[in-house]
Image 1 (tube, rainbow, N blue to C red):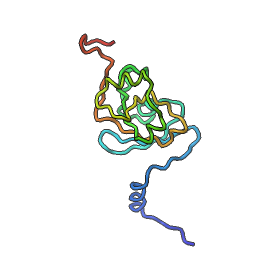
Image 2 (image 1 turned 90 degrees about the vertical axis):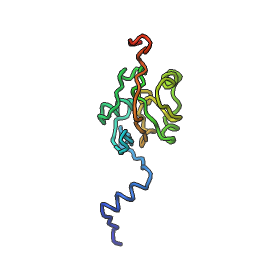
Image 3 (image 1 turned 120 degrees about the vertical axis):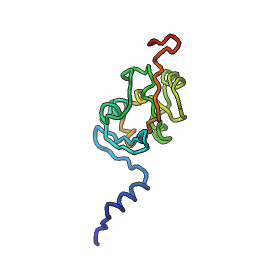
Image 4 (image 1 turned 180 degrees about the vertical axis):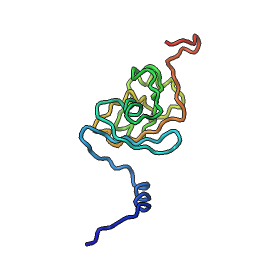
Length: 145
């Protein structure tokens, strides 16, 4: 039997229509990101860090994380795919309180600092919002809370 050889163009076309395949690399998860400009970026991140740390520190994407993961600012807001949201679970009450103040929230919004990467999140799919909002400032007094 002859092996089937695909040209790079055919292979790219096939992978664009096939859903992301989850794979297991010990100690790592694959993260699929839809960036603000609409382009896709995939990378591997170590298990045990937050999604915010993976986006900001591993992939060097435009995720501010102004409060450094203390769940105080909302600048790490992301949208998860429905399947990824189901696997990551609902936000905590503290996280939901902050999400209530963030701009452009969706049903699948999460603060990436509140999502810890675990093996069951391998293949997580996220989208970066078109803008981020820092809700750690008291706009009436124009000072940090």
